[in-house]
Length: 90
Image (cartoon, rainbow, N blue to C red; front, side, top):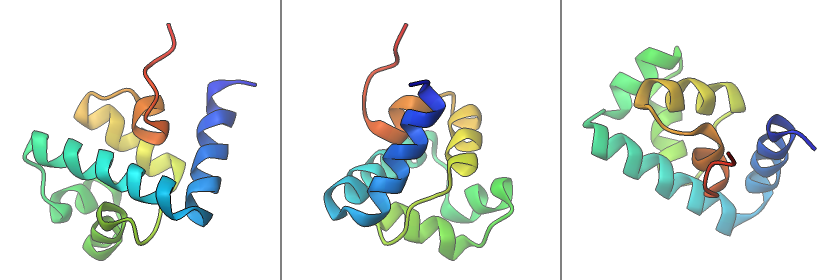
């Protein structure tokens, strides 16, 4: 199974699993805070509403994989870590 499939599967499970969704939200919120990036600024980068980003940060909804990929690139994070919480695989 490739990493893209793993991330997609994790995000799909996160949508239906409160614990996974909250863990993803915590990683996203922490990453944005460390970078000093507001929900409004992240929303502008992604072309989504500020409410979407706020919902992701609170664990109400789960961002799509393309949003995670773009955020990881802009914030210089490993997308696999952002999506799953697991360290990057070398």
